[in-house]
Length: 148
Image 1 (cartoon, rainbow, N blue to C red):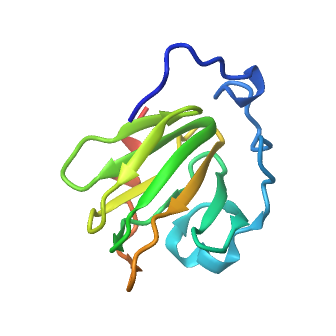
Image 2 (image 1 turned 90 degrees about the vertical axis):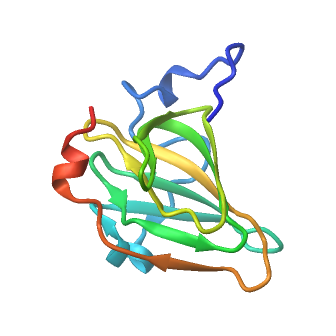
């Protein structure tokens, strides 16, 4: 994860002021993947051709289930608010606007908003022949409740 020290994040994208409306459209309620989320998220597909790119916005407390991107992997670009990213067996990492996460293929992980903040990220699917996603178990309330 990298946050540049010489980048100015606009106040409206800061965790204290972010209301889910950011630099990309919030999109519609994410009903296509709702079965794999705890809470409500929104999805706006920014690009389908060549490389899949989507803006995902999470209401406070919303997170997706543990999952794996088989082949290709994924890149997350934090664009507003405060959230979390966690790989299986590792501590959760806080995410904010300006943070970049590369998720290697085959990595079990989850991501979502902090309990008290909206959170948005752009998700970029790394192209690969035969890529697929495997959705797993929810992040437990107990596990999530330990995060600040």
